[in-house]
Length: 226
Image (tube, rainbow, N blue to C red):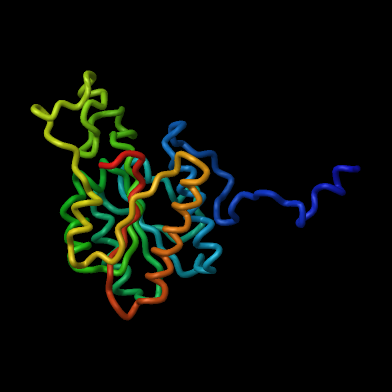
């Protein structure tokens, strides 16, 4: 059998999402940003929303997300992505608006913006990529760093007596009346990736079809129950 007989559309097993470009990613191996980018690109394309989607990326590892996903992006100041997303969605109610934030951004300097956007019930999606560490600045302890987890600034592990408890963002936001759906997902196995995509589709689908009611959605990527 010749190679041209094998390479046919009907034999395709997997292909790169068409909304992802050819730029090499700058992320550290194992951080899972690449997987999550792929899921977002697939969901947006499958929903036919590429021309109606606006992503908001703040300071941190996610700051270069516009290099990888071929949709409209707005850069936000550190931690202010939910505030920018609120304005964008209110001015463009027909758009699908989401933020893409890490734990150093959302759970630290951006905690106030996140909580108040959730409490107001803003009709946006927040993709929270929680690796429990400051990745871009050298691996320092983050608000979500787990107890006993070593980092550059707590090499012997997070000490509750000294550093306090990990901030449970998902549990915190789930208590607010303005939230519509808060879900924890992980992407460390093939099964988990499929489940995460299903939940991401549900989040984006709710925003798309229920614009008449302002709500807030959150996707939390965690491999540990924090």
